[in-house]
Length: 455
Ligand SMILES: NC(=O)c1ccc[n+]([C@@H]2O[C@H](COP(=O)([O-])OP(=O)(O)OC[C@H]3O[C@@H](n4cnc5c(N)ncnc54)[C@H](O)[C@@H]3O)[C@@H](O)[C@H]2O)c1
Ligand SMILES: [Zn+2]
Image (cartoon, rainbow, N blue to C red; front, side, top):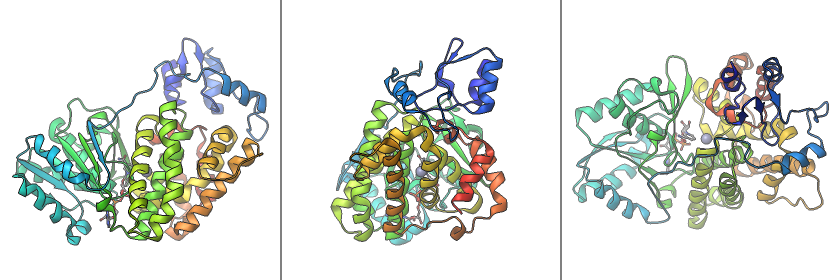
């Protein structure tokens, strides 16, 4: 029964004996609070000090910030690719590393646009020069589907490939992860929805990244759209972590301004959600905060001039560090809600995040003012002399200003989102794996309101 409560209130790591420890700034939902009391579980820090707006008082904030930093008896886990290569020219080294895997024939998972531009052949020609055969699957859609995974897997089996290489942005990486996982575990990809459902390591997987970005080239996340339900399934499994992650900014120079902006805002969202996450740690805070600073400084430059090599390189590092952060800490409601928009309307992931980000930050403000005020500083706001609350609001305004500067659409209505779809999307957002680590746990009505605020 207790386990059920813990699962329902998304607090798996905070329960010790009969005491439920709430992480700094975490407010338990009224339903979970009642259930905890019914079960005789003592809430060690509950929201008794919140005022009627749900704002934690200064004394409570002080107590929270001085409490032992790890309320989680389970500690934190950090998962990374075996090798990561970053910086201009690192693809050469990546091809050497691929050769060292002793592969004979690779399945290259990519998309039709990149194949048409000639980028794919420029890379596969280099494989062939090294004696590595390459078969190309270029059917991956943005928001890759279960059908994409089946097609790619059939091709892998038909050609008896021994290694999978993804070449592109988050969509080819996720599709390749799913193919490589099924190749060694069998079944269908929906069998692996959730956390660590597989038993075997996936086929050797090398991810060559061309956007900045999702960081999918280095994470244990794999997001596949179920074509029947139009829901994006989150497969969170250490067995899908690529063996080698390659971020050569040379491959990112060709991104148009709109794609640069959308993918860059995805990276910023990863960093901010990881920083605010209920499962954040000093390690994830360090990389998330650096990622926020780099995006604030270099994303406008990369959007303005795609050939700005310094900006492209710094964005590659920024998105990678944001990935290091959320791969361990998890994300939050921006992603839980964006996945619904991607699944239902096929909208670009980065655009959905960008539109929702300031609204979810505002929702989290009552419990995360301190951390949001840090975010404001990392974004470059002058917060001198301001209290946490005022500084946090400045940070949210700065995100809105940045959205305008890089030219990302401001509303979901412009994207064709319909008000009548909101209740179903809110229900599914609360079930999404990313919702668990949002610092403030909400009701369906609250999630609906956030969607409406973003219309
Ligand atoms: N697994 C994870 O950790 C994770 C994290 C965040 C997002 N995602 C997923 O990633 C997907 C989004 O990926 P994305 O934003 O990188 O875009 P994408 O891979 O869907 O690509 C979008 C478009 O950009 C084009 N493109 C890619 N690189 C280019 C380049 N260098 N120059 C010109 N065009 C280029 C592609 O051909 C495609 O048409 C979503 O499905 C999302 O759910 C996964
Ligand atoms: Zn994302």
